[in-house]
Length: 175
Image (cartoon, rainbow, N blue to C red; front, side, top):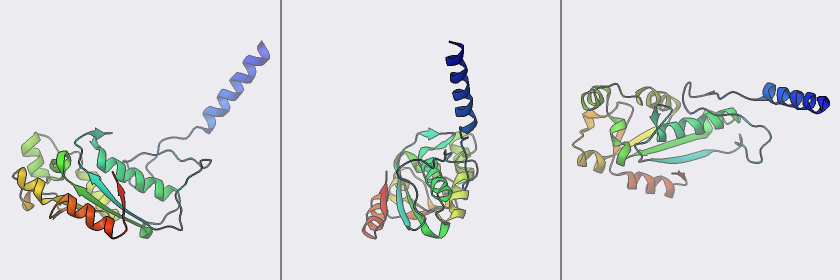
């Protein structure tokens, strides 16, 4: 019995010492990941990643919009896997429930009486090279003008047009 208990304790201690922490290696503070070297499918440093994300949800994850979280997580996984930034091209179509996340700080604060929790991550993602297109149909329906938008975003005719055009150009759709 003592021997079995000792073996269990040793195995648990070994597991705890090899456990990895959540990290954000590329987009600092956002899109946390755990790295795994022993899984079947990994990021491939030899591939070019052309991705178009559909940001339509108003849900939050870790204090930011879930869509920005997903983009940050993808960039972190790719970077941790050795894919260089010049091989990562990301487009984001912002619409629907996510539209208000793209407001500039003053307009967001006026609407919600608090700072925009997405402001910093949008800037970090833009600095990385992510292009954000906010649906002009969604902004028109919500009485948002181009001047009301975060300076790291721009208007696209519609999210549908952004998603269609980039997919026809070979970008992989990321829901």
